[in-house]
Length: 177
Length: 154
Image (tube, rainbow over the protein chains, first blue to last red):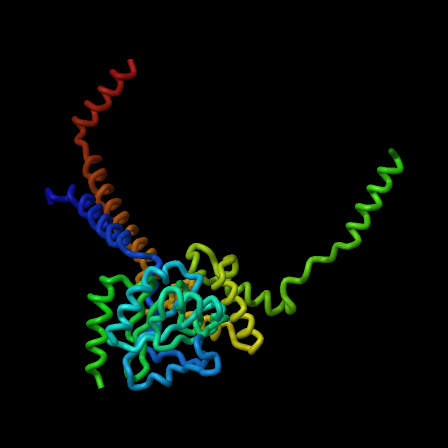
């Protein structure tokens, strides 16, 4: 009963704890409702070979990564060297999705910065992006053998995210049947 | 001088004749009205403090176009909301849905109010009991109190 005066103090600390956690969170990282759902299907022309098309169905049975990029996107340039490196290591097929862009600009971007993609799909009007809930480029989806989205990286891939999240997850997904 | 002024006025009038009425915002005002009423209740993902209806970001424009298409296809408001939520999550809705996840959010204020009322009742009962017992003065005490009060007045 004597400790009653500590109640407001305790409440204060609870409030501080809530605020502290809230401040650490990034409001830009909206959890995607697409995780553990089938990757939306689409069929669009490729960037490099305009007469060929790409559809996620083509990747069935493989673990693969879909990287949404654009030539106008500054943050994409930040993660680009990492993607080039990833492609050289041949760990995972990397498909680009050129979001709201023009083909000449995208081709120039890829020739200047290196082309890390097995192929890049062309989404000039951003329609595919809407189906994937893209709201900020770059975004990267990891899709498993059954065509289910298992992870979404919002913003540029950092070396840390690659080491701690993406590579272990790829290992795990490859072992799944 | 007068002639110059007249000429100038004439020139101005000609300029005015070239102007056109403002182009209508949308070809179908009914569709536009519904699109606005839906998108006002939605958050723009790019500039998170703006509604989808108010934002001028590229994505918001694309999404408004998408909503127009859906409306023209005859989709209901609920279906359109589902379309947005399935892509961007509950976060796009300014008015959170009632689900097990949001029970606390919706019920929290009422819960707090009930707790407050209970605390208030307990406090008031305790106080009235304390005041009640204090009223039980003996005759001697009452006389003394009155005497003190009188002294004060004089």
